[in-house]
Length: 308
Image 1 (tube, rainbow, N blue to C red):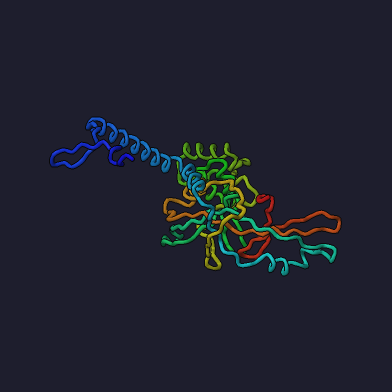
Image 2 (cartoon, one colour):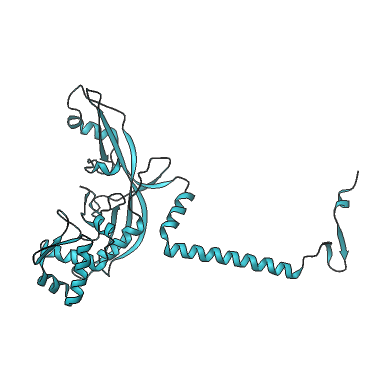
């Protein structure tokens, strides 16, 4: 049997121990090092470019890498508690009965922010922004929201157009040309350009000499902070059904920064999910009626068509 050492081709060299008989060319080693350096540099530049110019690609990549764990707002009500509390409303009589409830998770963007109040003092707060309907939550007790941000996001509104909308709102929802121009403190040619752009985007309509926001009961001129009734607690969840978002975090951040002025700053952001119960009632004729309920405050979600 051959000794294992016979399969090794080693040459003994003075003062240098044992080396393989095939010497690596210094030029080849340098070229390999240079190629590696170029590849790493290209990858680094690509990551930097995506991070700065295409944040949504980065976000999707992180979602792919994600093991399935995500952050949810901690439920304060169980489906059973809501079903018992709303029994008289949901079950008309003994012929109606509950089916098993289901749990899904509604995407929101949670932002820690700072801003200045009307007294020019700095405040800090938290904003919860719905990534399905594009509106900001004003109060977690009622879950009331703004109305108009989704239209502005869809139209690609900039900070000048948000300023026009805010000024019209401050004037009671309607403003004539002269008072609007005076409130905005701008020259005639600039005003004409801005108001014409807002009209073309269907954000503002003109009736005679007056302008108004092109929405029913618009509500976009708000304090940039969600009223949090109780501390928000997040926890990790896995393997649960998450609803698809319609708006991206970058769209929401851009809208908030354009709307809330130059002193507004976003400190941190986090994707969070609101637990939603789908409670189904079986009617006597065999048909089903499903309603959706907020697990944080126990209230029914009125715009249920958004999460179907």
